[in-house]
Image: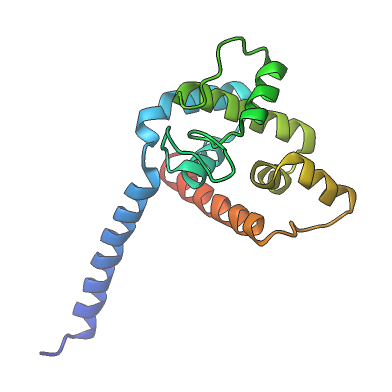
Length: 171
């Protein structure tokens, strides 16, 4: 049985739309559970919601219980030392439970605000978020234009790709 070109194109288009829908649903993941908190905190801190969503999806796939091999915790994969630093900086007086989604979101978005205020450049902010501010400071002092770590370069690409998706679908 031979398919006509028209039938093939229609079949391919339907398959592509279905595949795109599944991909989008997976990418949106747990967004609905945290939607209002993310939008509210991002508005207060002047952080792009689509960027925040892309970071959360890349870091933890919206899993509150996520823990990295390096010890980063929660939705936004904050290192406990980073969370302590930013909590003191913003006057956060509650007990820090990085497994609590609301606390993790708040501190993570505050950290993004701090990084943007300090560096201004999205690529540098994402580099800091992935590799650590101390490491990135050495790169910028050496006037290195691109992160020397492949993992960080790939992280930036992934976050920026997802940011575009979130911006198109949600924001």
